[in-house]
Amino acid sequence: MTDTPQVHDGLSLLGLPEAARQQHRITKKMLAAQFEDQAPADARLITKAVTLAQLVGILRPETIQVPKHQDADRTVVDIPVLEVVLADKTTAADRTRVTELVHRSMAKPVVLLTHLPDSTTTLSLALSHVSRTDPTQSTSVIDAHVMVPAEQIAPGALHLDRLDHTDMWALYRDLVRTAAADGRPAGTALQAADAIALRRQLTDLEIELTTVVRDARQAKNQQRRIELNTQARTLRAQIERAEGTLYSADHKHGVT
Image 1 (cartoon, rainbow, N blue to C red):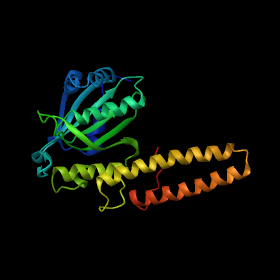
Image 2 (spheres, rainbow, N blue to C red):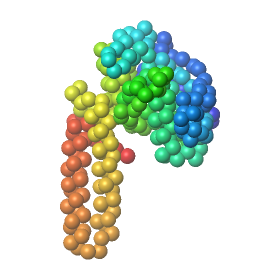
Image 3 (cartoon, rainbow, N blue to C red):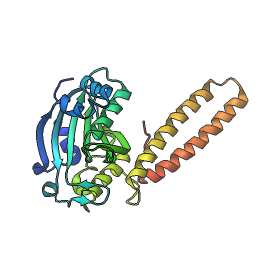
Image 4 (cartoon, rainbow, N blue to C red):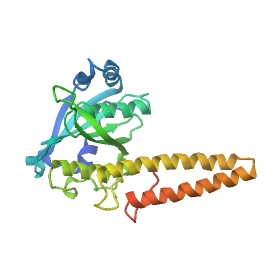
């Protein structure tokens, strides 16, 4: 893989207008700076795992025609769009950790596209709030986090003109909600945090189902096979219910 991220991925995924596009390199030192004193291991992980990072867009009220958001808990006046290339041999756990650290390193919502060594791209979004224990008010605490393979998202589903334009925070939450459902959420009543929880539940259920089906095939005892097959039917029913809540009726999906 080359050292240059596929910048067009982030731009096309969100349908960024020209006025919102940027092209600025971000140094690893800048990403790691927030963690050097309190969490040096995290700072070292960023330095080791990130090959290249850059800012490819900034969503602002004047560039996307969406009002700023301000309430007692948060102020959202801009949302950066970042793209990061991860180094070869970065483990799955480290990939997740790095994306979380990027979200935590800023006191605002972030749209993060992570380009993996296998040439796939993951969209990372986080519902967060400014850390109340940070005297500088420059970092965030993650309330819920979702990572979605970009190729699974329905084409055009995350274009900004399709999202909630009430204000900047509503737009970001709608982006999270839609991305968590691969671009085909069940309906507007589905909240962003609920969509993330449902996606995680589906992932856990499908992993469990895979294990149960494998064990049933390998079971030598007839009674044990019957028990496992019954458990598999229960899991499939749970998966179907969760999918019905998360996805639109015309979207059948298997979360990986």
